[in-house]
Length: 141
Image (tube, rainbow, N blue to C red):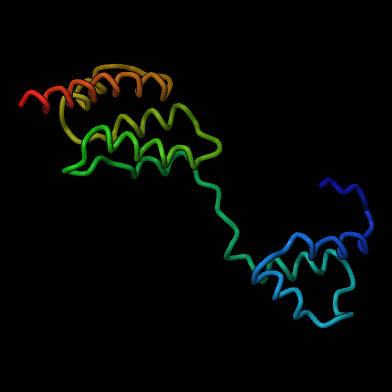
């Protein structure tokens, strides 16, 4: 529902319909007549629930996603992609750098060190080739 209005009284009346659960209970406990403007309600609500505001994740945080000692390349790539999907403004240069520094030593890491990539898609395409090779090697062993 879109609401086009500039009146404080309308915003104050509509606001409770957007709440549920403990936020609704909190709102219901506000003594009648104590809120005089929507701005005041906004400040009161934000101060009550400031800890619940999700922080936007940054691309640089992917630098901490590294392949575990016993983690397969497939599992690492899946975990990396999951983390990357939670970052709204993914910067390709940084995500490529993070992907290149995350794998533990081995053929894939060595290969990444010799090549230049500009997008995550390029790195993932190569990773998929190494994953297939790694899995075929395990099956024949």
